[in-house]
Image 1 (cartoon, helix red, strand yellow):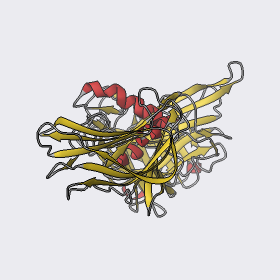
Image 2: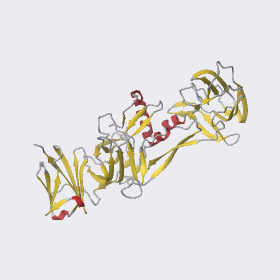
Image 3: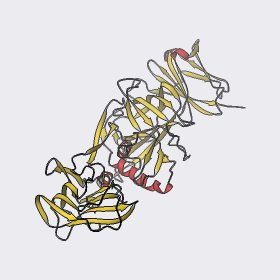
Image 4: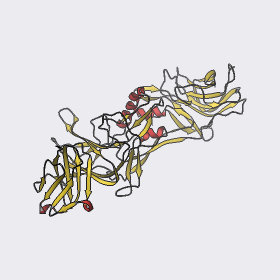
Amino acid sequence: MKLITNNKNKNKMKSIYYIFFLFLISSVQLLQAQNIPNGGMENWSTYQLFETPPPYQTTNLQSFILGGEYGVTQVAGVTGSAVRLETVELDGELVAGILVQGDLDDFGGGSPLTMTPDSVRVSLRYEIPMGDSALIALVFSNVGVINGIAQSVITGSQNTFEQITFDVPPILGVPDSVQLVVFSSDPDNPVLGGFLEIDDLILTGTTDELPNNDFEIWDAEAYDDLDNFTSFNSFQALFDLDPMATQTSDAYAGSSAVRIENVEITDFDNGEFDTIGFIYSGDLFSDYSAFELDATPQWISGWYKYAPVENDSATIFLSFTKYNSMIGASEVVAEYGFLLGESSTYIPFSFPLSFNEIPDSFNIGIASGNVESNDEYIPLGSVLYIDELSFDFLEGTKVPIFSDALEVYPNPASEYVIIKMDEKIGNPISVQLTDIMGRIIQFLDIENLSIGNGLLQIDVKNYPTGMYYYNIETEDSAYTGKVMISRR
């Protein structure tokens, strides 16, 4: 299964998959439902990830990825707000709270300077465990090369904000920029239980100021996602990129549908990747299912329109599982991948489902590209709209029937397929033809059906040799079957 490729830097691929795995596994929800929860695509929520004081970078992104507490937070300061840094445990390891102006792993640069400051004045409140130390440092650079550091090592405790001053030592040459770096603990040997709060950081002896030096401005990282589903929208928000899954009023029914697009993503080292847009109900890298079943689905249906780039195809993929009490875990009992072709208007899709074992849960995913393809190339910009996604069950009103009431000839066919319908079937309202991969290759509604004397004619002369499936929907039921097309 392909979701991410077209990397400009292939060394980044492993890290992206790792991020992808951690994100999805933290997002799984266990819900009981007979049908597909929120299959009408009506319910959306806004999720706030964390806050940061711009333009500073923090370890909060790492906390988000690993599902731990945030080490850098907003607190009450001398006046207004201040920033609090503390050590947190992430994935079994201790990580110091860090605030850096610029990249966390790239010291040098920062804010421009017109003259070298004499000293640094800052208000602090802190509780540093015995044997540990916090650090506030200003890193001075010239043309990107570090040429001086002013720093203050913080130990002990201070219960209220107190202003301290530390000098800027002699600097080799004249710096043109300065970067603020703050650690709540020794980053090589962090200790839990301590914190450092800073406010009102002033450069003395110069009119230059660090941006947001009183930490009054905070930006909330937030994103929208479809309820009951996950996507890569959270990471798109972190890197200020367009989301892959968005709510749209361009719907077949109701007030909204989901719009999914192949987009570009990035990693923490600015590697660029093209990825297939998707929404998913669970974790792509696990057999764990997000939704429980209390009936066995016989058919999956919905409405879609699709604007592919080049020869792209959209994908509906499903995994059905059943709990095995002998091993104490769920096992996959069936998997499906159905492809959707181009359509400029909403058309329905319906695919039959069958099982050797009755499933008790499932995952479902929808992608704006072909995840079944082995081709690493992903066309950016393929856009899929999905609405009214649902299962038909044995209790449903339109269960697919392989019926003797239909006579199909010639079979194999080369030019046309004639379907003779028994009177008890009733009048068809639509006909759909799909290939062996599940791609819809022909859809005819009631206005475009060629029917006479109970005979339905389907033109197949432009299709290659192979097995195909037809689905005839009437007002009361649905009928399905196979037909072979042969080119001699």
